[in-house]
Length: 289
Image 1: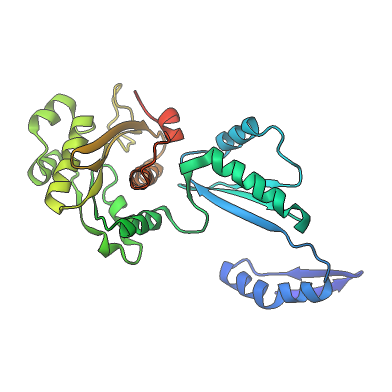
Image 2 (image 1 turned 180 degrees about the vertical axis):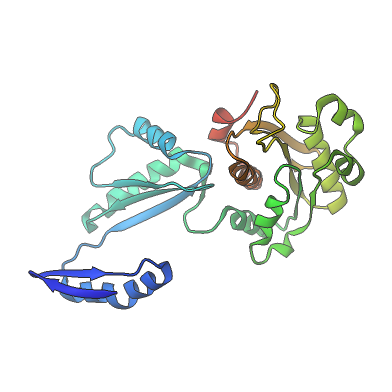
């Protein structure tokens, strides 16, 4: 990077590589600005990472809920998959109290859609919650092909809460490994409520886990039908005796489908561990009756 002075204006140019920029910012740029501009305002911000909303949908909900949003509090979004970042910022110390007030309003609106207020991934939040409750998790996957287990095991310490997952891609393996009945497969098909329920029941019984999730869907681009178009997925989640199910629809390419369904599975587990009674927004927008 480099610095130049032009007509009493400090011009600072930085590299785009994140770790280089962060080091230069903390070690050189901020101290330089503090010396050159001692009266520089000190902005304050807060961030939320949420699951279950698109950027435009969430912005509309906030606008409708808070038509009197103050100009002093800047509202921003950073779109990403699977988590959307919501940012609130004020520029002046005199507005810090205002930020706290509107932060509380946003938290009240979003509720359990808020996954974290830091940079932790969804899987890490789930693993930490499992650890706190001394519970173990399992997963039985078809359309996601092991991605849920992969997300969990990317987190250091996952072995303390995750001992086994099952990728049962074919119907034969669903039957032989997890005990899914041939009647369910023949009558309802692999992408069905009864099959994911039996997949999860088998996974919980074999692994001895306390809680789990099972998924089976049509990832595409082929294989869809009129009743079960590409993007259709059934999930079962919970513990033995307390299994819940839902059918959802996420049209898009195969990679997007697997990524969002894996995140959905983890979010349902996160909510179950929280004991959440708030219905997720995706139950309205993405759930198929």
